[in-house]
Image (tube, rainbow, N blue to C red; front, side, top):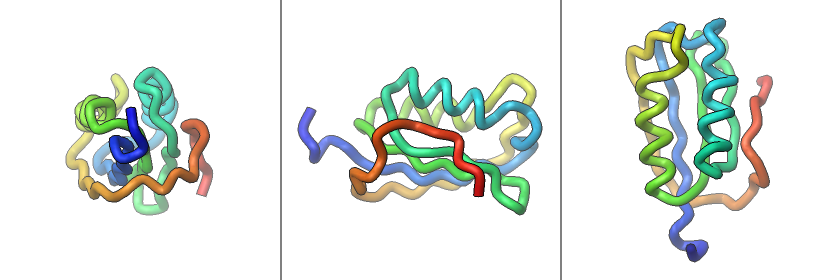
Length: 96
């Protein structure tokens, strides 16, 4: 895989996504897909995700984000695609 195959997905997940282990399940799924980046709760009740990897893995990750953790209820996912920044070495839960 060349560096040009790596892209960034920035997503905001809305619904009942805090207090339902959404970040932990997201962390596990991102690591399973060999993605790098972060996930964090937002003050408005949404969850923000920034992930970098190959487009195929990111599309699988986006499918997961629409489903969420078993106890979550995802209402909507807003997504923005950009060039990868190459600033991450792993995937983490971030506390903003």
